[in-house]
Figure: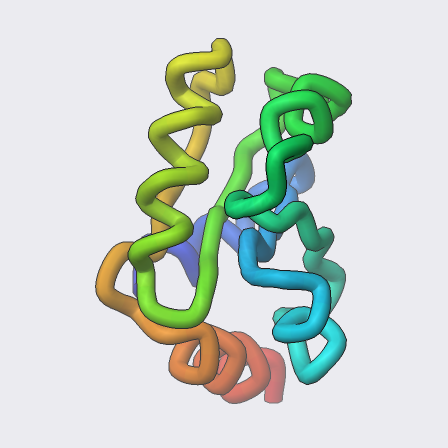
Length: 101
C-alpha cells in the first residue's frame, strides 16, 4: 500500500480505477476514482476508451477482481497498472484519507 500512496502523492498522470460493481461504488469509493465493473461483459470495451499512457491503481473489495482487471489491462497494452492485491478497499480509502490530513 505504501507504494500506491507514494505514487498518488507524486504522479500527475494517475487514475484510481475501482473495478467493483456500480452498487458497491455508490456505497463508497476512493476520492477521485472512476468505476468500471470488471465482471460486466463490456469491461474490455470500456477500458479500451482509457488512455494507455496513464498510470492506473486498480482496486476492489478484496483484491480478487482487481487481479483479474489488472491482467486484462496488461494484456490489452496498458503499461503502468498497479494492482492493490490483498488490500481491502476500506483499508485503502482509510490510508488515503489519513495521508491527506
